[in-house]
Length: 453
Image (tube, rainbow, N blue to C red; front, side, top):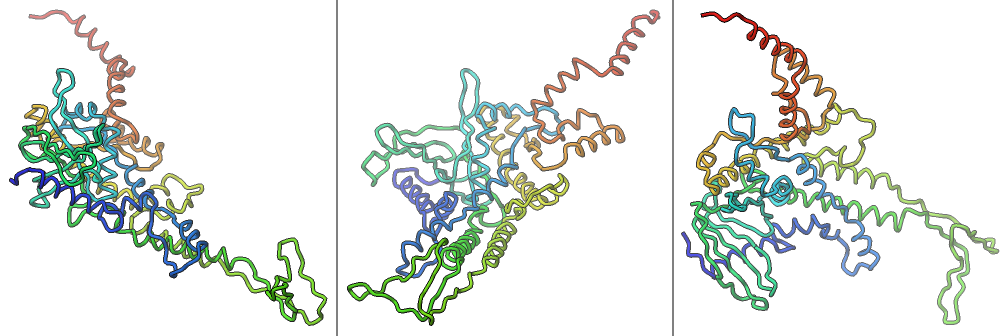
């Protein structure tokens, strides 16, 4: 295990800073594009300010929509042991840490940048042991693995923030301790070790989320940056055509061009939409040039966006906004490729969350929960489908296959574990009439029956 000192902390910080470099950094360029700060389309050297203005206006940022499309379909809704209808004890740690809202940090980080993390540490709330369980953005955290397939890293880093006096704080983690380093304000040359605290987990307490396990985890944004630049180039060409060639240019011949007192030519006509060119010279001729046809530019734009959507597995119809009077079944067919990709992310991220739950149980002293390898994360069903068709299918399953209706409640889209718990309580307090009649008959029969030896 390496010796954790200020020199190592500085080197780890420099590696993360290199990744965050906005021009060529692995993470920094993606962050810049997500914020709408794209590389400008090509312009010749010495281009006029008007050209640069059109180039800035041509930026059409599709990248946030790609990550939004997938992150909106990823929502963890429970954590259940095998063959159990209720959530495991570790699910209470999820609620105590507000992960219903914070889970999106881990999902978006992995989708946009390829890798994100969650930090798990021992903790308590009042007198109850509740571990600290928080997702971390890859823009302020990093981890180093001796083997790419290891569950936990060898070392990890988190930028914690800045103190009131301007000192930067950074934490370095290994399998035994948490090392807190501080860099005083105005001193960019050195980190100072300010605290060392044992966490007692036996592993570096970082859980990794990756968008893919076979090869480099790049995220969904970095592979399509060239396609995003192509879209911007097409929009730039379209704006250039609109600015300079979409209106008919008039010409005139056979005219004597007047000059001012200095011999400079003077515009003979004041052109405007409500003005007419007139000349007394019988040799004068007037005409105009044909305007540029814009349909080709528009088709090329649609083609570029469709290519961007196909590579990212997002329906081009959804991206182009062509959904008009479409049925739920047709919408489901359109989103089929996106839903399959979301299913792949649920598998990858689900394994990470399960690892995090086991580590959280260990931090809370729950040895049984830490050793439970069969418990699984439950994902909320966000697929677009007709509610009426879903209810009809579930009703047929209950009546024709004799499946208990309580087992089908969780398959209703949008239903949460809280809804199911409440329905179960209401069902127990108010049984259906046939069940109530049967229970009353059995009670009276057992009460009126004669006693026998």
